[in-house]
Length: 168
Image (cartoon, rainbow, N blue to C red; front, top):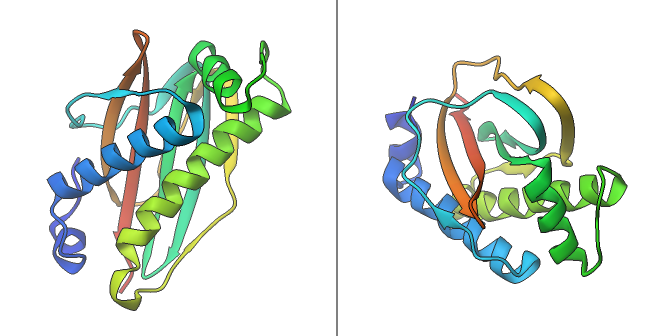
């Protein structure tokens, strides 16, 4: 699936431009807050919704646009990310890990909100939601379209997904 034409036209941003913005936002958040430089790959054509030994941080959008930005990360990489972000060792799934991944999702949401709210558009963010587990599925229950970007840090992959729908 891809970003639908209505969203791209109404924000004057193409799917490729929005994908590039998500890439730039992710790189910026990781380089400034996590002190890591993720490499991006081509956007995926279909979302990934099943995760194993992972943690997911999500922030919702409401207002002119509804949707979710999410970061899905293997626990092993999330521990490295959290350790680097906090400047202390994080060796297990705990509040520190949940807070760090939630905050990364929040910062990514804030960056996307800046693009969507240009021209006075009404866009609000939810508080971050974090889930983790050995085997779980994340599904969108709407007909929204999405952009999914895979990233790599130290040969470990994580993905950032953006699902949006323009409200009528």
